[in-house]
Every structure is written in C-alpha cells, then in structure tokens.
Length: 351
Image (cartoon, rainbow, N blue to C red; front, side, top):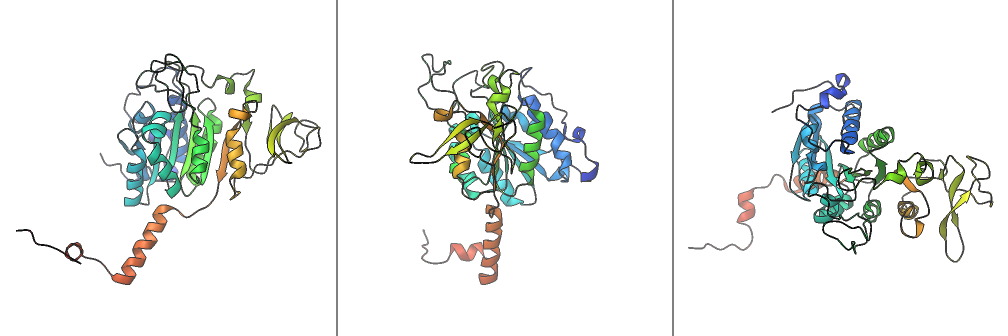
C-alpha cells in the first residue's frame, strides 16, 4: 500500500506505529529500540514516505512490520545488499537497515564488511544480544568464549567478534554503541546517526530475557553501571564512575591505555599527574578509536565499555561517487544502447 505524502512538521510518534501485532517475547529489549526509533523519526524533518526499513532474518528483523514506513524483510544475512540496491535506485530515500549479531556478523558478515567500506549512505542498527534468539539459543558470533548453549554443550571455542572493532577496521565513518536499556542515550545516538552522510553503524546492546538473560547486566545494574559505562562526549575527557576515574595513555616503550583516579571528581588530570584522554570522534586517524573500541574486553577487561559515538568523519559516499561516474560517462559518450553494447566487439551467430 502506498504511503501518502506527509508534511514532516506534522509527524508524531503515532504516525510510525504500524497496525501489526508486535510478536517479540514480553520483556524483550527490542521493544525499547522500536519505541526509540518511532520517537526519533518524526524529529528528523523527513517525510514519512521517504523512510525505508530493510532487515534480514532474526528477532530483530521483524522490525519493518512494526514501523509504519516502506520496508522489506529479506533473507538471512542479505539485508546490506538489498539496502544498498534501494539506496542506489533512489538516493533520496532515508534507508535504515536492521540486523542482529547472528544475521549481520555470521552469514551476513561479508556483506556487512563491504557495505561499511563502501560508505553506503545507510543507517545500520545491529541488535546484539550475544545469542541466536529466533532459533532458540545457540551461541552467536558475539557470544563469549566458553558459552554453554544447545550447540556448544561443553562451551564455545570461538573467540567473539567485537562489532565496533569490525566496523572500524572496515573504515567505518560513523561507528557508535548504545543500549536498549538506556532509551535517552539511544535516541541521542540515533539522531547523530541520522545526521551522518555515509554508513552510520550502531551496535545496540539488547537483552534476550528468554535465552540469554543478563548478558549485559553489569552495564544496567545500579550497583555497577557507573563503573562499567564510559559515556563518550566530543571534546570531553574520558571519565567514568561519576568523574572519579578516567582513561590515560601511558607512553614509553609499550604505549598503553590505563585507568587512573582523578585528582578531583571531573578533573582533567589524574592523581599521578597524567592528562586524561579527550574524546575526538572527528579524528581521521582511527588508531585511538580502535583502542577505545577494545575497552572492556580482552586485555582491557578491567576497564569500562565505551558508549556513544566512537568515530564520525566525513567521507564521500558510494552513491555520490556512482552518480558522478554516471554523469561523466554520459557527458563523454552520451546515452548508450543495450543493443549496440551486445553487438559490439567480437560476436558470433549460433545457428
């Protein structure tokens, strides 16, 4: 059914609520993500008929049914290819891609990587619950090593993928992390992503209360959330735990990140006299961004996990380059003919 033209200034959250019954499990973190997206869309100044939501397979990928825009529920892992095609066919559309840690990083990992490196102008939401939820609880590419599941009864032997590190390694121009348990922060992150020209990749921590309940509990519990979350702000020092601790770079033969206590809460300098790192997501050199992406895991497991926009730089988008290339070809050779192309060069007639 066609969506009639809408005046962006009159849109409300209700305009993006579909009539379909939401079929996620009660208590699923996806509800929070859906509500946040429906809250943010009418604030972007874009007509409703210009939004398209593309998804793959998984619990997350039911999303297009629940937001009242154009959309397509595609096949496992192939959302990046379909979303790319939609954007290239009609660059004026605001194309949002919804995927999960299994859909986007396992069978669709190759497509995800190339979508990011091409800098397609897509808004990508990767719901990460560290489990295969739709197929009832198998370990996923982001499950921790040793995870006991139906397909790994003795514990998974796989090292988990860090989605943020993958996106940065692929040259991601906008890379961010947020949590379904923090709607205010999630909405701020979604708005920043919507304003970005290029691939805006957002990892969203999302709890599966049926098959992997509590996977991100330490980021949400009142007792631990202040020490486990490092909320990033451009131009602000990397402080956490109510400003009492922060991240410094220790230089020398083996430069490394370290946690030190602040001189006073909110201070720019630690008690050891070291300056706390200041966040600059616009830095073209993504070395520090890659280090920040590792906080909370591996050798940095004793540190908080970065939440917010980790990198945001301006690069040419793929569709802009393709349009320019097309225009140059037209100017040089004029409008082509398929028939002439087929019969050009060496041809044979088979009788």
